[in-house]
Amino acid sequence: MAPEPGHPSTSGEKGAPPAAERRPSRRGFQAFPLFFTAAALYAAIAVPVWVLQYLGWLPAWQQAPAGWHGHEMVFGYALAVVGGYLITKGSRGIILTAFGLWLAGRLAHFGPGLPAPVAILVDLAYPALLFVLAGLPFLRAAKSWRNALFGVIVGAFLIAQGLYRLGDIDLLAEGEERGLLLAIDLVILLLFAMGGRLIAAATSGALQRRGVYLKGAAQPSLERAGVLCLVAVAVLDGIQVGFPATAALSAAAGVVILIRLVCWRAWKVIDVAEASVLHLGYAWLAVGLLVQAASRAFDLMTPLTAVHGAMIGGLGVLSLAVMARTAQQRLRRPLGVPPILATAIGLMSMAVVLRVLSSLTEPIVALLTTAATAWSLAFVCFSVFLLRLLIRSDI
Image (cartoon, helix red, strand yellow):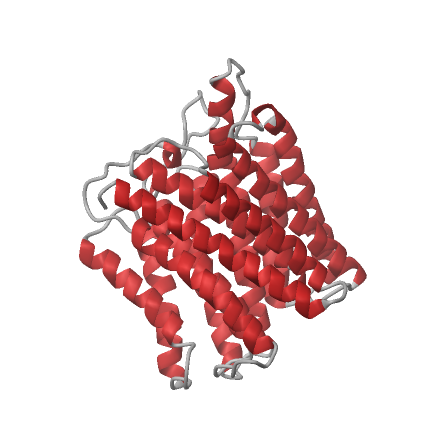
């Protein structure tokens, strides 16, 4: 969801497309089929399991259901997508090791709890290796803060995981909530920064094919403003201060996203499905940030509940769109949104509306279960899409 490691983007500079838009060679063992498939299947299963635990129809694991659910959506699902996207170089052994560490982290949260030292090592292992394989190459190759940012974000997930685990073993007051909020803020920051690269390039390309030149697609001033707002939110959430300030900063970031969509003239390519699904995900991210800001300002719901708009809408829709686009590019298949993928995007959009409503109105159980069903069906549809793509490409 950023330029590939070792290849800083030049999006918006002399018309060059970002590295994420280039099609890598199909040779060699690639990480994305393994990680994207696992991420989709895990997301499809994990949310219904959490709902069953929340309703008391299934025993909880060693963690409270809400804590397990939040942790696994970020460190399980989101970081699997990040790994599949960013791990572009490495031997079969390295990629399988990374996947094995990710899987070990997921299994560690099922069943009886592990001894604290072991649990900490297992939880930190995959984020640490992800930083080595993807974060460090960005930092080494970066010639500007825009490229270095992605390496910093990947590394900061280690801090978030550490805070979460310190709270889990009672060494840091409210450490679990701090770590989880910080991790969610990092996901939102990553999604926002991605907009300056992948979405800008996709929109610019679609417009150019219609004879329209989009000047200044990278929007460095807007990107800088949004990044500063979201970094400040992450810092304040990490130290648990400044809720009024975080509300204002979240709202400002949401407005910046809407301005970017207007500047990109998103409406001019609304009939270009592969660009429109990216715009839809980015718009959901903006709406989620505005809902989060309103919730914090008027105390409508808890901070962790308020992030569902950005996480289901922004992360859910954007991750589906980006995984599909990435798979098509790396398998050298035509870009497009076939009906089954469009269905997945539609179901995910329905899920975000129902999930936010379940936090505000009755009937909570019906809205929550329907939202979880829509979420899971979206990932089932995506899994079928990805499987078909891989079979047709002989992977």
